Image (cartoon, rainbow, N blue to C red; front, side):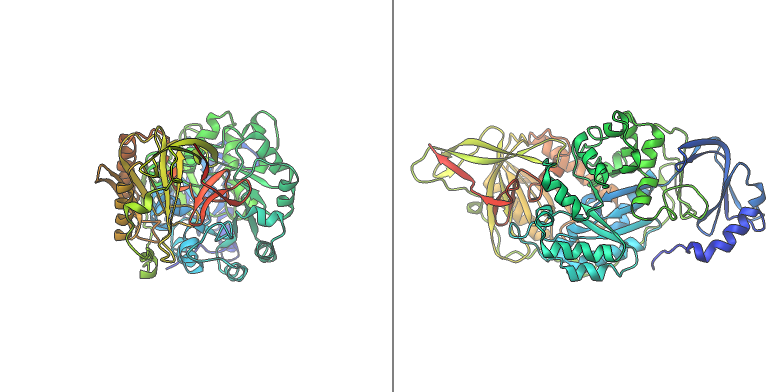
Length: 599
């Protein structure tokens, strides 16, 4: 059953009565340091009274709010900060369902998430979005859904399992809990006035909701200004200070991210810490965090600590993870601060810089204490249609993973996808590749990459080359997490192991597997859409750790390399990507040839 919190209108009379002492509060937190994100103050020796899941009184003394049945929590001079908000993220990137993702992040102090389920939208369409939205609504924290905007993200350059239409967007805007439109990834479409993209934006704005941005280009000239004129209210694809400044100057929020593999906070937060720009235009987010990061390192508390370590004043950083986010989505009167009338989302911590999360309250209820969750996170009964998504025409073979060279040549120059550590963009490289027995035989740090179609049973396998993983053994890594169309990406140095890995995922219904010298070394089963597991986050994280160890044993030293692997088919982020239709030059948004010249 959906977990709802009474509206302010429903509770106003009681909140007022509690504040003046005419009725008793449900809970009073006594003797804490009230961190006020409205005024950027720390107010010692203050009390907070909670009633009906909302803050009723915030002041120096709340004894008048305490009755015989009031729960009293002694803050003992700890900081009382608002629950943390993630302004942009994809639950599917955690390889977890909404319930298990919530279970993983609640002990880290996350009480609100703004999620864009465009991963499942590419596989299952609007029905998949509805399933994510329904399970999100069951959780004891606030999970707002942004309706995905771009499936496919680059029409004509990839094939998805389902497409999202303007009619789908208009329908979703009527659902309760839909907060806006997910990141508008087809930025060339917006820049050139594509009618479908503009119709989706118009439907969102007509509903009075925010349009998420995604401008993955370093060009800050007329193209960027055209995109800004198209209506996106925020953008998280910036990688340098100039990107953050340009977005804020155009009235967009610069969402700066620290995910499992995206380290874009340090290079952009200087717009505030050094240039002195108004921090109200900046929001902290994660974008993509896998389960290992959530279990071992944290969630928004990790981002907040990192921002502080990058030189940001702790109170300013806290604003970027609370009130700035709430205000951006039109929810300042609901979430994002400790103030009367707002949902009672609060954290007790003894250190404002290192942020140990000692007690978490969401909607007035204790949901975690001393690192352990204290509430249930209900699961949806996911239907068979969401668990049977490997629609492949046949088993693949070794021959599917060979790249034939022109007859008679011993070497050939080819384009190579270059992985950039801790960044979403790739490089467009060229390399001379040896030819043996008529096929390209990459050496050094160049591996084979293939995309195996899994939605329409076409049997299509697209081949290319990738550099940067550092594999030194005969191996293959296959994954059905392959942003954004989520076919199957296989990277390897052994065509035989590439075939074994691909067929293994077809057999189990999706996931990630690593094979070395003919044997499986690691496996993460992701039976829901080939993207998620409904197992506990700790179990998925343990398998992710095993996968990381297997990747390192195969020679890969990249930080969170599995995230880099999963984005190699993301055909809206420069420079070079792979899709089911071929190799894509994202700087031109056009298919390009793999082979350049023979020698």
